[in-house]
Image (cartoon, rainbow, N blue to C red; front, side, top):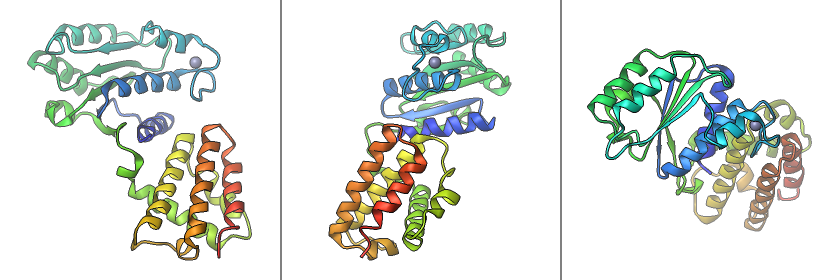
Amino acid sequence: MVSATMKSEILKRYREGKLAHAFLLETDDMDKCYEDILDLIKKLNCPYEFKDNCDQNCNICTLVDTDNLPSLIKIEPDGQFIKNEAILSMKNKFSTIPVFTKYNIYIIKGAHKFNGYSANSLLKFLEEPADNILGFLITNNKENVIPTIRSRCQIFNVEYNKTIFDKIDDEILLDVKLYLNSIFKNKNDLLYNKTNMSNFYKEREEWEVFFMTMLYYIKDCLDRERDDKIDLVRNMSNGNLVKMLVLIEKMLKYIKSNVNIDLILDTFVIEMREYYE
Ligand SMILES: [Zn+2]
């Protein structure tokens, strides 16, 4: 769930043309993170509309799935360490421009397992970044990654075994509160959705995080005396707050089943009107 943030953030930067040359992903599940990166690579390069999967069985996605994409290199420790030969061979292959994709992409699983030689080779590579090369370094502990490598990467935390309830993003919570207050004040029209929310997030996954955060916040307001209760919460009985939780869960289901986001937001505002006191 939380990993959705990493993927949508990278996708956003990709579309804005502001991608870092290398990402360091610290995760509590390297295998899942690795699968997620492969998924992201398909999503970045698939010529068709890619939702949870490629529905066209396209060439690019098939090449990724069958481990045959020439512009993708996967590196893992060989024995105890990542071998220098692996990095040198990657550099050599990536001296040509990518054929099927915009970037030559490498994934290093176990970025805390460099020895002096392989670390040096990668560092030289990171110090002179080519525009068409993109790297994903996966580790279970960024503190164990050589600092000079770490400092040249953009770092993301990708957690799978923590739920959103353990790790709420304050900025998103602020957006949620602002939204709830606004629809509470403007409950007679749907203009707020149209003017302010319609393009608030680009990715469906971001909307999922938004509504998950809302779910967390309302649940927490019910469970304990939060000192940041917004007007909408103060104006609703506990019974109606529980109904609101059910409503939010319904919205999350709609998001997952690809219902149009504008329609979801309007449905939410309309159904919420029932619950204000
Ligand atoms: Zn595809």
